[in-house]
Length: 150
Image (cartoon, rainbow, N blue to C red; front, side):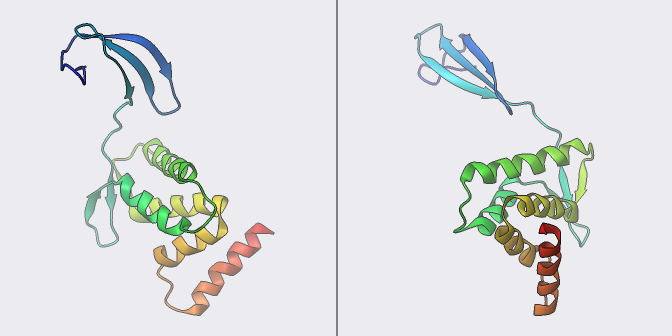
């Protein structure tokens, strides 16, 4: 680990704590005595999303977060909640143990998380994800949502 101040490679770990998703380490440079913090996460195997047309695309957490942010826009949902949804979706995808995941599975996982978090955000996401072509299909989705919440 290089010191961010003097770029020396000799650093010592002073403190180490496990977080939910990472290990936080407090380090000290042996050359200049500067202290800094690092976060270490295990590298997960590379995931690919298989699109409806058969194309393969590298999984992008940023795409998931972008869709979530649009769905929760102007809703009383914190950024931490959005990050937590993305974390749960990502964990589920990795837990499957597959390197290629159909885009429909990713979308269904996001929708399931949004259904629990906020019904309006769920409907917003579903309207884009499911590409409702008419009012009837939109009403059917609303009816299903209402039936499940009763």
